[in-house]
Image (cartoon, rainbow, N blue to C red; front, side, top):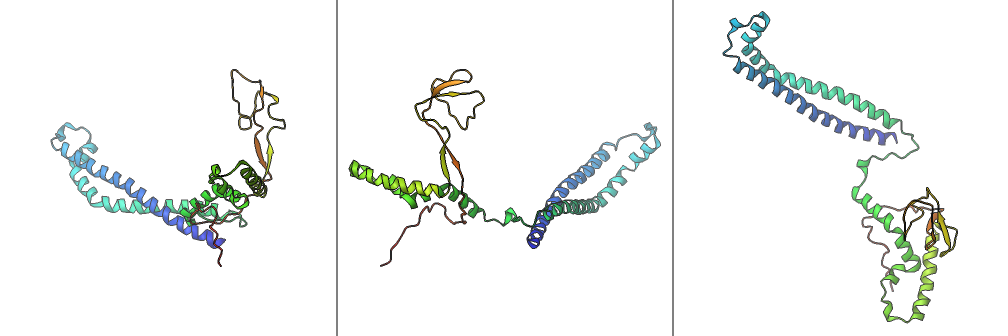
Length: 253
């Protein structure tokens, strides 16, 4: 666990260093460029200034030595910018690295620590797809539900379809029962009168028909709704292609 954390700290430190280096280079590079061309602009526009008209001696000295200041600045500006970039990058890197290291090392060792960069992104996407399609694969395995949906029922008599549906119904119900328990949201029969109070949960009750004004509403139950209880989430492994719901079966003779 510690090795894994240290590995991530090293990886994050490199990214932080280069990010800070790029930011520092842009900032101090722009600052140096502005300083150099600002002095150049001043030196050009102050050539024709009459020094006798300036009463302040310090200001007169600055104007008189502006070219010298410009030459001095142009000689030292690049080394100075380089030193500032290095110092700012190194100091900010140390501070941010220490902060991140402290957070990572305080994670309880009982918890699995896996940096996001260590994931296979494609495999993660396929796993999410598989979670979405898993129930469909269960219905197929237990009740051949997909086979039933893709069957052309016009080729069969109603009696044959009825017998097949009974088997499919049992298989699908058993498959779902392995992972969750289904219960109706409303403990009342359909077509019975029902009053919807104010403050009702819209996730639980869907209003249809002539919905005007504010609750309470009086209506008739058209569907009791369903909720899932005792959910037993399956553990799914990562796959290369989640579109394979159920493998084809080949019986070797």
